[in-house]
Image (cartoon, rainbow, N blue to C red; front, side, top):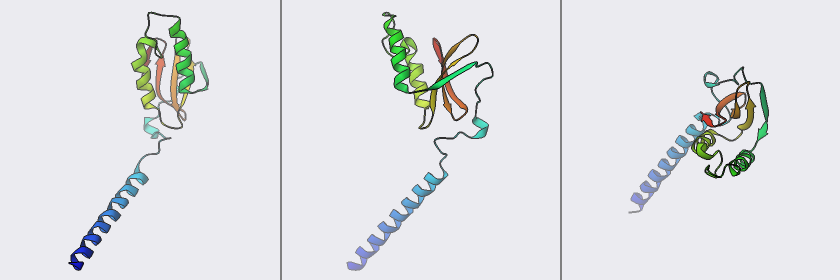
Length: 129
């Protein structure tokens, strides 16, 4: 009986060590949250004439809600009818990403940057990710 108990403990210990080793391998091989592979990096388009300072999600949403208040027929959520696009853009964000206003000669909006790479952007009235 005691021998069977020792064998069971040994099996449990071996399984625990194996699980820990797999977890460690996964963490060490997983890509860093703050970097994109170079091949996946989309630089800021050359037609962008202005990129503003970093904004927080709450700053962007607050400014949008103020604009929505001036249009009572629009849903009173950030970006009104385009809220689902804003939510999608926020889902793409990782720790260390920044949200910045941008302008071109013909449009503007917000872009999410990861370093110097564009993760996604929203234009006035619509969002593109």
